[in-house]
Image (cartoon, rainbow, N blue to C red):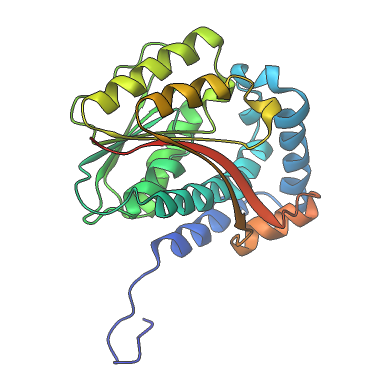
Length: 260
C-alpha cells in the first residue's frame, strides 16, 4: 500500500483508480486499435450525424460503448469536475445530486466527489447499458448512488435533491422535451437546489442555448464558457491520439444556479 511522507497510508485517489478500472474493464476483450476505430466512428456520429443520437446510435455496439467509456466518459468527468470547482458548487450542504440523462454517471459522480461528505447520487438514464455503466461507475468511485431507467420527457425530480446536473444531454433532446426539462430545472432551483447544465461549446450543437442562458440569468444564475488544460488519463489520451482526437484544451459551456 502506498504511504505518505509521515509513513501513514496515502489516501486513495478514487478517480485514478476508476480510470485504471475502466482500462481493465474494456481492454480485456478489445484491442486499443479496435477501440480507436470505434472512437472515430463515434466522434463522426456526434459531429456529422447528430440526428441519430436520439435513437441510441452512439452506443450501438461493443466497440462504441468501449470508446465512450474510455474516452468521452473520462473527458466529461474531468470537465465537469473542473467546472464544479470553478463555480464553487461543491462543499457542504449537499445531500442528493440528481443527474438527469446521466449516461455512465460521470457528471453526478464528479460533483458528488467534491461534496464533503459525499452526497448520494440519483441518476436518470433511458439506455440500459448506460444505466448499468453508471451503477458500476458509482461503485468504482466509492459513491452511494442509484440509477433509474426513465425518459426525461416524464421525469419529475425528487424534492430532496439538493443539486441537479444535466451534462451533454439537452442537445440530444427534442425541442418539446428540452423545454420541459428547463422548466423542471428552474422549479428545482426554486425549491432550493443548485443546478448545473454543461454542454459542448460548439454553437451548432446547441442552437437553443441563448434561450436557456436568458432563463437562467433571469433567475440570478451565471453563464460561462470554459477552456481547461487537456489533462486526461493515460488511456484516454492515447486513444484520442490514435483516433485523431488530441485536444490541446478541453472546452465546454455551462449554466449555474447557486442554491437560494
